[in-house]
Image 1 (tube, rainbow, N blue to C red):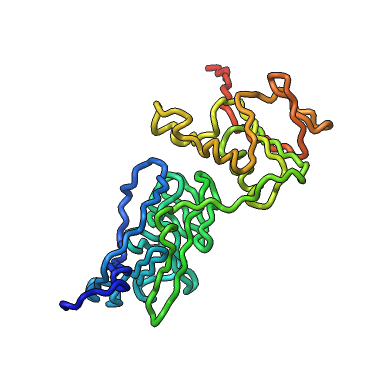
Image 2: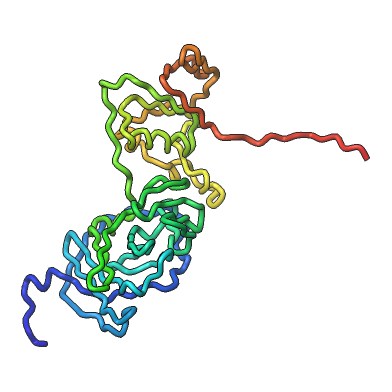
Length: 304
């Protein structure tokens, strides 16, 4: 006490870490905002051992680029369980499976539901609100709704302590878009996607993520960008632009051409061509039709 802190001491922040035993379902049913707040650094502090599970003496060390947090001891966690822990001022989902630890973002990338309240089985966690599924070993999204994957954080075990190591920027922005290749003029192939819902959008993104560099054309009879229809049942006055699944900039950056406000009137499979209601035709090498369904009403004659 009374000693003057050095410049090196002031670049590290150590704060108390406690495991969140019961995450409350309090997140608003709105899309998760991607924040880019700068990471602040303050002086070093110690947390009382009596406040940590297993008397581990949990601490967080934080620099401008990296945050390292002791979140408990190995015996604090059981195989097959998911638990929210604090890393700095953020929540992280920690999973123990076959005595191995994995850490990913704690909120669903769809509308921000707490994944600690979801169902978990053998490496897959399902969102408690709308059922999006994520692989906890990679953070990748494996089932809609939702398009973005979770951030994945490194977990190490040292002297019986479980330590989460996270990039500060990845903690701030819990969403992650899987890398996509760019369209190449050398690839003359064309994939045409018919339908303006999430199925065609996910197909387009997956093609780019898996290395397809040819042309992608998405055709929709609606004049707006593909939007999240789930939201319509919760905010009836909302506009399609407010719940667009991706921005126009996203489509432009990833070479996904949009033909909006046009209906397909005919498919000429022998010529690999589709005709639109304005007389325009599009040729394709591969055609994907994912227009969804519509209600059908039947009348039944009942004799009494």
